[in-house]
Length: 371
Image (cartoon, rainbow, N blue to C red; front, side, top):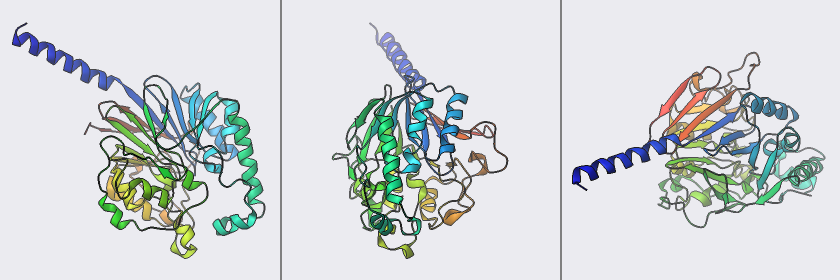
């Protein structure tokens, strides 16, 4: 074989390889349900993963409408980050509307059978009589529903076996992965601006956080991970590394210092996390009313990194985050009369690291080339 022939053959192989990378794609849907997370991921194999499912009864109808409108027939893996109602409350009823084959979570609720006194100390402004009993009832319904499918308990370092995607559990039960992901592990300078705060002993801190990879593309979702478990994941070394896209943790919640040390520890999105991930785009699912007792610090930290590449399921008009929004073209729900179709933000990610984000409300789209 001549050198010229070899060069042509090599060029053809490289071209076919690159074409193959571009042909592989995964679709992410960030669905507007108000306050709460619902993220569908459709892998190149056609398998579907759902990251959390919201809580109130109206959420079920909204998700059911969305899956019908977008031709989703089943959920192969439903990943429940933690056992709070705005993340798993709709699961039992949803399982009656669409087949759920695998239920993925961290096992048992750490708040089960806690007394009203316990809850009052940890949920002061939101505490109410019978809160513990309601929490038990929510988890009991969830456990009954997950018993109808295959239950997978995950720990940090495990993988969710979605065909066509590399889904790594990077944190669970308050503990991070023991070894950094490939390419990660560098010292994180932002740790110097991330103080040690009070430990969270409720469910937020137990969140199952995942990084979903497709070739060179990476997406991070950390549920409602609170300050200290996040700090362990990103400090002193950054165990995750840079990602392309990030669903902002804990609905961008930062608690005011007036509520005390414990509540400050429930905050999310430290400088170590946001700058450690260094996402190209960020997605926010908070609801329009923001956090009544919160501040806009998390949103400001995220916007400092992604700039105008912030996409939201709803425009934020209330709470401590009022007015901290991405461009209107990138907001799926800006208020007004209900839309016929359930609003969402869609991301098409390719294995070469490029991706495209589209707003269902107006069709506005933006492309991001491979790094």
